[in-house]
Amino acid sequence: MKISEMYSLNCCGFSTGLWDTDLVKRASGSMHIDDTSRQYVKAGGERRVTRCLLLRRSYRDENGKPRNETLANLSALPDNAIAALRLALKGATLVDAESVFDVERSVPHGNVAAAHVMAQSLGLRSLLGPPCKDRDIAYALIVSQAVRPKSKLSTVRWWNSGDTTLASDLGIAGVATDDVYDAMDWLLAQKGKIEKKLARQHLREGGIAMYDLSSSWVEGTCCELAAFGHSRDGKRGRMQIEYGLLTDPEGRPIGIDLFKGNTADAIAFTTAVDKVRKDFGLKELVFVGDRGMITKTRIADLRKLEGAGWVTALKAPDIAALAADGGPLQLSLFDTQNFAEITHPDYPGERLVCCRNPALAESRRLKREALLAATEADLEKIRASVAAGRLKDPEKIGVRIGKVIGKHKVGKHFTWEITNGRFSYQRDDEKIAIEANLDGIYVIRTTMTAEAADAHTVVGTYKNLKYVERDFKTIKIDDLDVRPIRHYLAGRVEAQLLICMLAAYLTWHLRKAFAPLTFTDEEIPRPADPVIPARRSPRAAAKDAVKETPDRLPLYRYRDLLEHLATLDRQAINFAGQETEKITTPTPVQARAFGLLGSPVPVRLT
Image (cartoon, rainbow, N blue to C red; front, side, top):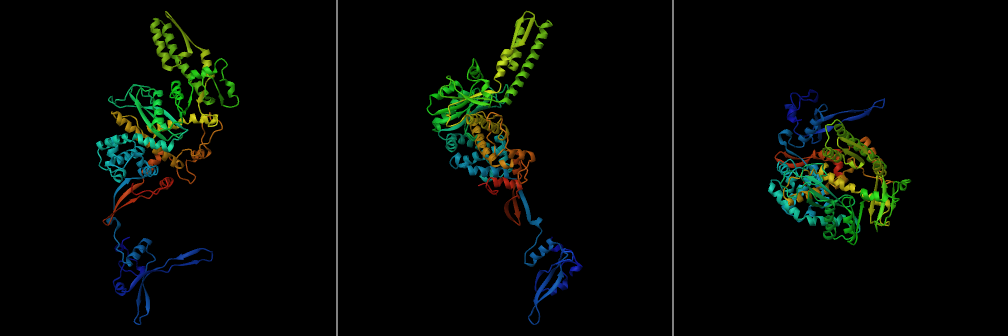
C-alpha cells in the first residue's frame, strides 16, 4: 500500500488524508509507532488481544523533560500499511513496486541444472578431453540429449532461441550447425580415450562385462553403413545400421561400436573382445552374451585366449541333444527345484546350469497352439480351393503351401500330401510333443568356477543381460530417442552414437539418484529361485499402491520428473535499474530432487 493512498480514518485522528495540517505542524519531533496491544484472559479461559497501535511524537517540554505525544490511533490500519509507515518513518523511500520491478525473462532451468549437477559429480567434462570450445559444445550435446533428445538442427535452434539456460551458461550461445558438426568430429577423435577411462572406473581384471547388439533404421539412402539386415525394430523394408554396447555388470555403458546394417551378432562380439583385451588391457574377463552372440565358433576363439571366460546359453538343437536318448537333461531334474547343474563331455571345462521356467513354458505352449491354429486355418483355405477344383496344378499348390508355412514358422509341425487335384495335411503330433517337453527349459553354459559363482549366481549373471536391454531401451525409446539415424557419414553416425552412449551413462546415474521420487524399485530382492520372474520389493509395491513417497510427495515417471524440473525457471529481474538473476522457489518435489543430487539449485551452470 502506498503512503500517498492511505485512506482517511477519523477514528485515528485523521481528517482528509493521512496527515492533518495542524497535526503536522505540531509533530516536529521524532515520530514512531508504539505497539501497546494488551492480552487478557476472560473468565471462561478465552484469551483475547486488544490491538492498539499509536503514532507518537517524542519531544522535550519547556523544562527539557522528555515527553511523548500521541498523534493518531493506527489500530484500524491493515498490517501492510503499518509496515509501510514504519519504513517511511525510518527514512526509506517507498515506491510502487510495479513501476520499478520488472521480470525481463523467465527461462526453464531445473532440468538442465539437474543433469549438469550429476554430470559435474561424474566428472563428465574432464572425461571428454581437454578444455576447448569443441568440448563445451560436445558436453552441451550430451546434456541436451539426456533432457531433450532432438535432431541436431532442433537442438541448435533450442540453444539459440534462449529457451534454455544451457547455451548461455556454457558460452556456446550463437553456435552454428557447422560448429556442432566440428565438435562431433572432435568428440569422435576422443572416443578411445573416453572408453578407456570408463573401463578403468567400472571394469576390473577378473570381473564381468556384458555385450549385446541392436539396430536402428536409417532415414534416406545415402548412409554408407546402411544395409538390409535383421531389424530389431521390426522395420521391414528399411535399411539400418547396427551397434554393439559394452557395459559393466550393473548396466553402466562402457563402450559402443558401429557396424554395417547386415553384420552378424557373432562378428560384432569379436570386436568387443579385441577392444577389451587390446584397448583396455584386461586379459582376465568373463563375457556375458546371448546364444546368438557367443556362438560355438566364438567360444572356440575364446578358448585360445588365456584368461577369457564366458556366460551364455545353448541353442535349441543343443538342448534337445542333451535331453535325447537318456542324456543328462531329464525332466526329473526339476522335481524339487527349477534349476540344476550338470556336466557333459561335449563341453569340457564348462558348467551347464539347466533351468525350467513354468511361466515361460505355459507362454510357449499357448503361442505354439495359436501359431498352429493360424497355420491350419490358412491350409484349410488351400484344401478348400483344391477340393472345389479352383486349384489343381501340384506346383501351384506347393507354392501356396510354402507361403503359408513360411508365414508362421511352424511348418516343421505339419505333414502334407499333394497329388493331382488333391491336398491333405495333418499335425505331426510326435514332433509337437518332443518340442513341448522342452518348453520353458534353457541351459546356461559358463567357465565360471563353483568357487567364483554358484548355480544361483550363474543364472542371475546371465539374466543380468536385461540391464543391457534396458540401456538399449533408454537409447532407442524411453529417454534418448536415437531413432531414426539421419546422418550419412560413418564418422558422424558413430559420433552420434557416442553422444547417446554418454547420455545413457548420465541417465543411468540420474535414474538411480531419482529412484526415491519415481516408481523404480530401490531394493530388488534376491529371489530364492533365480529362474522365476523377478518380483518387486514390498517397499516398491507400497509405492505403486499409494503413488506417493513415504513423506507424501507424488511419484513420477522419470521423464515426467524431468518435465516437472523444467518448470523451475531462472528469472532475469530488473529492479530500479539494477539487474539480477533469481531462481523461482522450488516445489517440494524439485527441492527433494536436488537434495537427492546433494546440491542446491545452481543459479548458473559453471
